[in-house]
Length: 128
Image 1 (tube, rainbow, N blue to C red):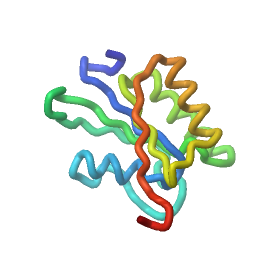
Image 2: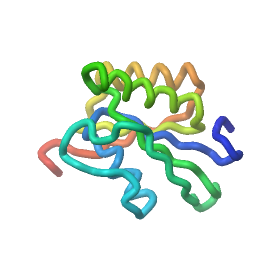
Image 3: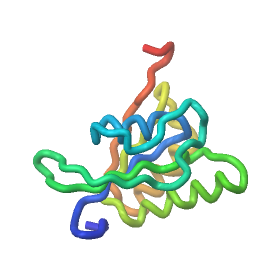
């Protein structure tokens, strides 16, 4: 395991406003991360200890959007990518079944780090 304290670490990745923070809140049953319609709300990785049935104690990490913009956005992306060095599983959150260049680049990095990953489609077309 890459994570500290021998607990598996799970990272949540995706574009801005794809629902990463909503997902960590749903998984933990708490308001761990701030959720807002404003893109770029998550600035630094947010970590939370959780217990997953059948696995035990884990650390789940919410990250900033992989499509952030500007100088500060580049720093947010870098901090998100640094999380790849510490996790054991990645969750890639997509919207409207869209897998574009940012997602493909991230998946390539998952392969480079030999990380297992899941792709979760969080929002469907037409709000359904």
